[in-house]
Length: 516
Image (tube, rainbow, N blue to C red; front, top):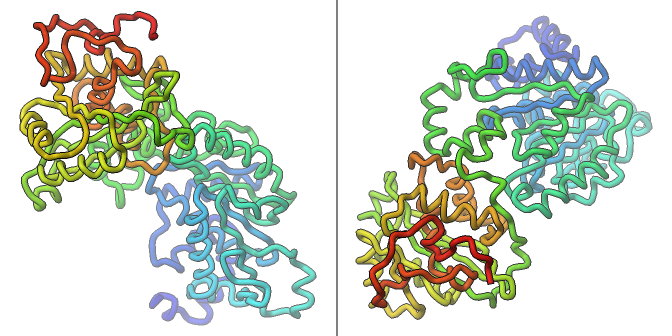
């Protein structure tokens, strides 16, 4: 702001003329004036791609890593810039979430009313409060011309609308300025096949019919799954495409040079990869969907069950992988294993097991007991399988004395490695749709399960506690879902004969026989 105040009248006039030129350079200058921040190199590539598309009569597909600020530069600041250049045109941006779109529209509106750079460069563009200035749409007008004449040049639609893809107001809207499809997908509408199909249907039957002859069509996205809206745009010859992963590429191959070293230096990228796991990092930061499909446990092996079709009366089972921290202070800084509790429901008549919910987190032992009690009171399980190894045995006996009203089964893993349990025992049950996963979008436990599934590489470089709890969940109800009982009983409180050495799925009592 101080830089703007120090400009002479002549300097200010030159800058305004340059900004109003409607060019990549004009926009970058406007952004720098408005924020006091340097316009980064990767954003230069985006804006030049967008203008190149307009010259060619094509749209733009801007693919960028998470955190590269696609929304900031394009949806927020470029939209405000174009409103200044063409206040007579209408603009819409569409996002996955109505809440996010509303917040971004409010931010753009604040630029139009309060930003010194906008007021310097476009002093004649002001809010038209009489027409509307709120979440249903923002109108502007030109203060330097007769209002009646101005209204003749504009349409009945607001200058700016921001909305989610489910918004009814999209029907019948045909923006004459920008139409920005900003990350239309998220974890909610890509996990549920029903929601995913609905998003694609909105795009194919509504969004694609919205542009007019003057519409500037821009897709900005981080890819989620094959066939999503962003992937469709980048593969469509009607769009020019810019691809910006977190590491620079040469001839399509990744280098070790960060794309945006000022904000994402190599050390930070390595930390993000370590915290998020290889598969998620590949998707969100490297824009690599193939690597995000799982190194060992494949994403295609997971079958999703509609959460709204899961009935509360279905028999419920728990699997618990026990771990604890010593204190509240240790919880804040701990990289130790999680306590994890998986909830499964068995669909009557089919014997399908649906991993429906759960909990994971760093808990002290008393907190872990309280968490089990909380979930038992919520779900009333038939049986809970508790890992009875190490401290888990102590926890199992504590639960047996706790008075919690359910049946607890102590379970061991025998001499099976994690690789055998996850890859040989569990994976075929998911692949063959014996075990399903709820598509509930609001479950952190299910999010973590998917993350651990995709990041499992056999070397235990990422958390696997949720996978462990799901293994115990499957084991505790194996006979209920049609996997025959074996000698190595899941309930260690009952004496059994000396167990035979397990072979493959024999640990679950299933040797390839057809399910009853």
